[in-house]
Length: 304
Length: 325
Picture 1 (cartoon, rainbow over the protein chains, first blue to last red):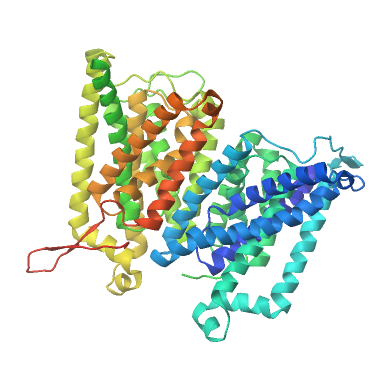
Picture 2: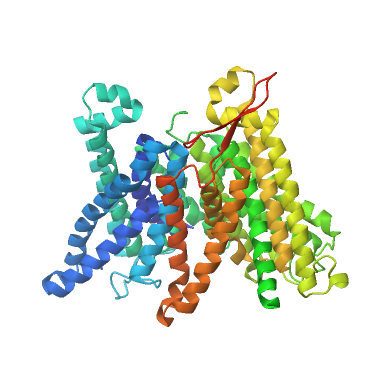
């Protein structure tokens, strides 16, 4: 039971990171982006490529940090992957979403993202193969936090949790204390009025994609550290991430953080009562429950 | 020669069944503007419902009520309708993307439950041993398939006529009114939430009917038949044909199913052996590109919607409207 709770919090850390980007895109561009989870795959694979590259070019970097399975090479790769994924997100927006936006309504965007998810996921499968990959082949031994009740935690997972919390705190500072953060909120509230006040809409949209892509890349790498990297990880993550945004309320960054942890904990606690085969259904049940009780989520506001 | 004809019969049957599903989706998306991301859940509910109600007694899982076939098919449609009603009731009054997310979730959960609830649905094995209707009269060979195709075409025609009538009826105008301007429709005393729910459930029942026929045709259904790719295929058919246009939707069904079958055949025939494993991925990329490409370059589809302007006291004027509505 406590083990499930702890596991849930650790899963919640990367779900939250994914959900933050998704909720920002859904708030500002006003469409449910079904391809957001593919940014996590892109980030995870991009980090994998650079990780392998650095390890072979600069063997110095392949030393591990303490008990973690994270190496210097991987740490650098994560940073590169954040940038690459962020710019990929902007590129996809420029090539596809912006054109669809200019032609059709919001639902055409949902639909385009639906198609893009299929394209990206399968291209990754074609390029990297359908089998799963790992950042490190070494077995990461779990630390025994307590024997009764038995509580096991991998050092990597603790790192992931703390790194995620630090990143979220950083984002909170940016959104609540800087002009950039205010502009972003202004664009979400009222795009025309914000533009009148000199906020550059195109630049803000690009910024949202970069933030969403960068956070998605970290989330993807963290997912890969916790489980494994597969081309279909986006397919498995899309529903939990959507559940996190809906639980938190679409458009609320803080809601997305909390929603991610709630969905992570609930999915793991569900294992106590449900056979593990049913766990992919749990996020859907949570969406239904939230829609029944509090349709706008914990922090969301009604908006047409 | 008989081989080619029997293949054509087989192909036309499947394409027509999928065509029925596209017509159901067209009612939801084309006429009412509802995004159903879980077409496959309605389709699967129809297939599973029909086979469980109409099949012979089963060991190990629920079903085997051996109902009279039309009743079983009806039961499958009801199952699809109930599922759609639950989701629609919860989401249709909210922001439009909730419906997209919730229906997508239904499809994931549906496949997941069908795969795991072995004691109810037969699990990964699926439901076997279904006795196809009239099999003792027609046998299992070509005659049966030809008669079955005729039956499917009759159902397709009935659905087509029903939807065409519906589209030009006051109710159809109401659907388009809500799609175009909800506030205006509301100001005229209409209730958009209720109308949308009716349209969503009706569309899902039609998709469920297609699923029931599909299950009957193969006399078998398993979780492999309710994978998300089917949703993408049916969407591609609708968007290629032209949302809002019943005939276009049908043409799209045949075009996409033809392209899908052909690409599968061509890849298995000409692709090198090492690449065979990736046939599915290549086809999925193609389907995704068709969807995105159509949205970019021809959002109204190959056969755009013909908006009918009807005014009281005059003859109906037909206007061709370019552009995505």
